[in-house]
Image 1: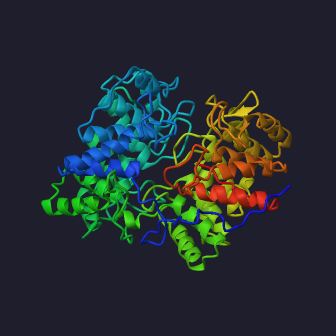
Image 2: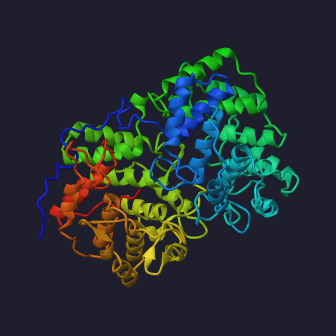
Image 3: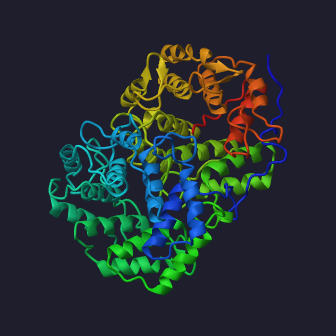
Length: 584
């Protein structure tokens, strides 16, 4: 029995996406990484905000804290060391302490593997990003010695490659300026300056070789120089008591990036954002360059313009701070409502987010490329009948994201998880590329199977079992040709239904996300969709007209809910309609 649903019923009638001055859509809210970069930069130049703003920032950051003392990207998500570092460091910068409670220490200690390195989340493979974050939290926030230091010294020693550079992990081959910065910083934070065995002459030569003739530094030779890479390189050199081959050329290149409203990250890219200002100030300090008051004034004015009222900061002026996820959500809505002008503007914004200097799609332009944002952007453009002008760059970037364990991480160098792995394969599908031509299928299969235990799936090996992970594993097995394995996983899902929707874990409330992931798995396996899900979708709508993630309700409208609710409604009314494979 099908349920008739209007395609236009994607957003509540009273809700309007917050359209930004740059043609996209955004939340006009705070971003964690931007808040860290803003406060850290202001502290560097001695211009911290007033007490009332610092308290707003503290309130925003504490809202990300979980009961064990660790932090997540936003309220309600699982903790990771990425968010824990940025939250705890920012709180310390504004004079707030983070208590080294026993549960907090136990949580961060659980991230360390047998080799002494750290992972982003429990169960993930260790990488140099996470190791950097963890060692600095131990030293600077908890003020505790890093455990298993000698094993960590051996792990860090194993990062050097034949070209002299440092890699993301002991199992990866690619060297990168960021990896070198994180490894050198971790060595120093852990007190291992005399214990890590690198060939310093080759490492120095490799770092210096990343300086372009223009004076700026690159992540690796195939990239254009940018302020982010320049800060990472100059700071890494400074920690080692080294300097660039051409320090004056580097200083001049940085100064050339300054605009009246602040620094811009790349040549021929005129937008001043929080990361460019952070990187420029950090690099000038690493070069021991005195920052004049007039420069500080411009940086301060820029960062103050990025402030969000009553909270933290975003990456540029809030009215212009579009992001890929919200813009993709708005594009789904605009297509269904046949808003031609909006479809054109939003599509163009997403296409511009595929910048010449990054091969993936960024959450916010000027930031690093991320796989889930790449999926949402490609899926939304496909829904609108559009695509990126150069999908070859995107497919190559995705293929390079595959880790030695066969899975994919959220961004380059990060450990694998099932959400990111699913996003990578689905993004290739969305741009019409066969994943078997771009990934190592045997290793991919191995990673997926490592996330399955007793017939159910988890986001990382040996992690918590969830319905969404089980559904994602099932869908991936279908793509790999293992239909029996895929169907076996789905046999466990009906007992996880409650109130006509699917729960993430037994005993919890049904959620829109778990239900969407389950229906995607049914679709992949050629199974019918339970008609009673329509009742669940109705229960998600509050009296005020908001749509929530659960029937518990919502105090405001999360824009990422809207495409999932609207597309799922359309699937129930049009069984032949193919749901976009969106994950979060």
